[in-house]
Length: 274
Image (cartoon, rainbow, N blue to C red):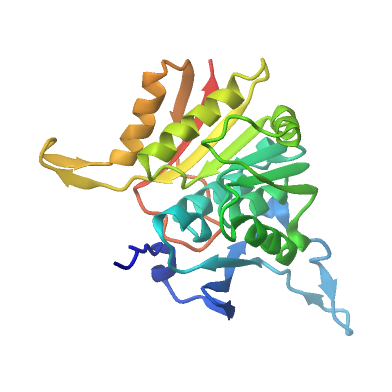
């Protein structure tokens, strides 16, 4: 029997400019508008007659990704939460400039690349499975002109408890933790919460975690209503551990810089240890 495969809604929203294909992978241009505080260098130019050349108002990330994957490899695709979190980063430079940032479950690396436009150092992590880590490195190379500081790509499996010293050091040095589109499977969610617990309670450092996700509603007979089971399981995992965390749903009224459908089911959660 053929394995069941999944395709992200991002790929069906509108036609995009595909640069080239490589087996099951495609390189796509994802346009974004420059925020006022992130205008590209040398954007003011004059032509040979001395007339002002209009500033470039749009940038383009070249992201290699898969169009269709099995569930365990959905990180090879792009999902709306990554764009939402990238928008938030670009809209709030004061939170990310000169910071050390770690992203968990980075997938193809789009959110980490957006963070690297502002941060001092970004450590982009995901499970060492299939093409994920090599693909992130290729995407970093394609978009190197946007990266401001140091960029690391490291393996991190939520199910592993023994982390290498190099990863522990990067986590200890970071004050901001990012995660997008990692809440979709109950087992993975449980291990993700365990990973956050280990990070937030490793020392007395005050850290901020941003988790972006899309609530996916289904109708159940048990509830006689539509519920978002993956999102609810995420909240239950935190409650079961009796973790003293403050969870705040961020108002999504910040500007949209990337072109995607910012549907009402998208959620951005800000987490602090209390």
